Length: 238
Image (cartoon, rainbow, N blue to C red; front, top):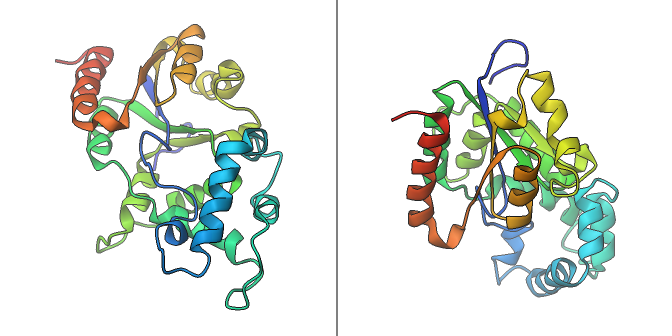
């Protein structure tokens, strides 16, 4: 893991998490398991939360609302099988189960070898931020398992920018979100590339002076090839 002050990067790639590196949802061990006692109630509550309560989700991503408060808002009926903090703990534990786009990771690793920093830049929640930082601090495991792709990916990042600690979303003020990190590493937006699935985030980042590539996960092979070509061009390598 690179430490600030020990490495002088010439460029940086800011990469988004959900919709780019992973497509898996929160509480995936419950939502993806129809046999789980809370599957139906939680799936419906989460669907409503993200589809109908955008302002609350955005406050969650800005760090204005905690995961525990979100769990309370879901109003899931208590189940004697589980402790009171079960869903709050699962919001953290299940992040570690999220499957990662290994094809994209290989491309980012190759970029890293050119002296380019790889920084996770995600509009995300306190529970995710806690677990990604914890994963980055863990030592590599001797044997790979089905869940270690999350830990391997966490250790790839040279740093993490998360909206719940930045207190703002990427598209709301890209200078406030990114500029401190850039200036503290003697870089500017002209040295930065954003890889994001949202057109608005890409547009605002470009307006601030950076380069952006919109990632479309439903066209994985096409996008990977396109990204590889554009990445080599941006890095100015053949």
